[in-house]
Image 1 (tube, each protein chain N blue to C red):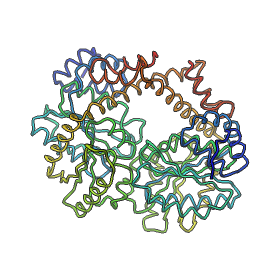
Image 2 (cartoon, helix red, strand yellow; image 1 turned 180 degrees about the horizontal axis):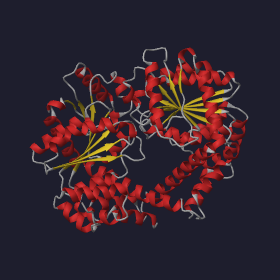
Image 3 (cartoon, chains in turn orange, blue; image 1 turned 45 degrees about the vertical axis):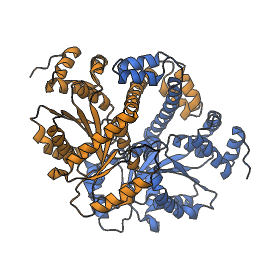
Image 4 (cartoon, one colour; image 1 turned 90 degrees about the vertical axis):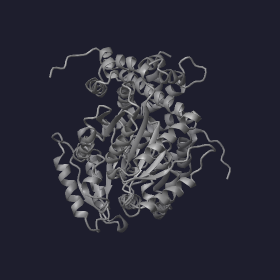
Length: 317
Length: 317
């Protein structure tokens, strides 16, 4: 298979025409940090902004991939095109388990209305990849109605996904440690919907009850969204329809209140900042440059300068 | 108790003289993001760089606070002054559990050679606070020999603590889920020492064996540090001496190989970057400014601009 360099505009046109190979190729450019990314993003942006981005997160073992698969099935039943980005933690030790999960998604592999892609979360332990918003834009411009971003929820990655998504679904399961422990990491603040998967197991109702009382305890302003707590058995597809209904309701609420627009502007702001910061880091780290950050850091370490003075020098160019 | 505004220089002099109130006051200035911080850091920096920073992390329930307390006891036995920063996750729902843990530290409360401070990890879910490196500098300049930074290990916060510390200790415990699961989040890459606490429980040896074989499997260059796997029963103080010996050995290795210097320069670089970025964000977000980031983000969201063009505009001032 020869892989000639294709013009970004041509690739974007083919991706918008629904060609899976072109979509995959664009996401590879994103992953590789290709120099043509700037051109690609400029070509994509006018066509983006239509997809609803759903973040799906939860601890290892709650059944994220199975739930994703069940949601895809339900969304297809409603005739919606679905793009899936599965963000893998970067640790080389977890590859095997995730690969096993992916196999369950294979039922969608031949459906042209579904596009599935695993992405490595490089440089971020369990975190959401820097490339994720760009890959989302590829799928968005390619006309997918819903983009599911699935990531293992270990701390910070949950916050990152909540900042990226229009609607964040937090998955839990019974038997994953006692209630209080499971909620310790602050997931209450980030979930728009909570889903207790494996609800046919003992303890599902008690997890639900605990979660509901904690949600009831949390202070929220009038008119704020009150996250529902749903139950699913994803392996049997049970409850996926209620979850999709819940996502729809959250979307309607978010559109009505302006929250959707605010989230999307914040997402764009984060992305612009990340690009600007990368550009600045390249400038700051330039070899032979007068304001070399390593030289400044060494001076601070030696007690010859302080971090504020060093930051001033860095920003002075 | 009246709290008159004290001059930063005076506070720094009193902190260097070992006055706990002055040290606490300086850390409060750090936490509050006081406008005099710039002056405080300039006064502190020449006196810093002597303390050894030990990061201590692990999942909820492995016994972090008990381990911290046991290490403090052992370090005091060796006549070393110890500063402890306990980074609390920001979730309001976890306050109670942590408070309970803190009480165990009370045996050190009257020891003038020990300073203990809890800090909220604001804005970072389970993460290490932005203020942590500055608080570390306060304790360092105040002449503490060892600074223990304890944080709950949920994903990203482990990476953050490893970037801050000279030596990172990862705590585990038997019965916290099967071996592979427990190591999933990539802790192998960040631990300089692994400590299996609650080693009197069933399963400690099997966790140790699994961990050791994974460490053996990981590729590392010649002369690289090979993390030891130790066992403790922190509640009885068992094994704390071996942990402190292990920290000493890692420090000696890091000094000899230049790794210590590299880590400290990286820490200073991160800190300078964070300060520079905060300054830039203030500039970017300035109301009425031509390059207002919110205006740019709205344009990207509307498809009228793309993130690269927006970043260019931001950086052009």
